Length: 86
Image 1 (cartoon, rainbow, N blue to C red):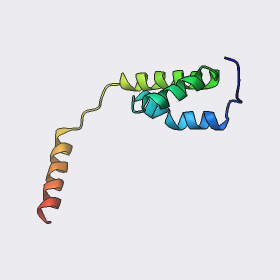
Image 2: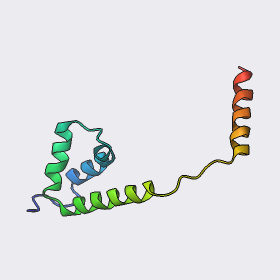
Image 3: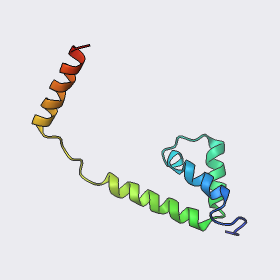
Image 4: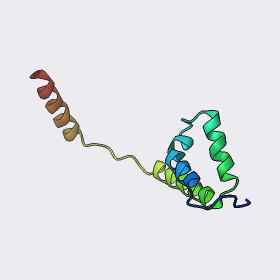
């Protein structure tokens, strides 16, 4: 990593703005190549991506809370009541 740009530059801000799309495989090949090229030269952005991936993995491993049946029933009744009046 040669440090061809200053971390915090416009390039870093653009990368951070598109990082979620990158992680979700929502970008085209050209956009992915731009991000990967930037990261080849920017250790702080690589560290941020690593941290973000770790955070996503940790959140994904948490148990999913279940909505109590009475709350589900109440929501369904409210939905039906609201849409029945239209």
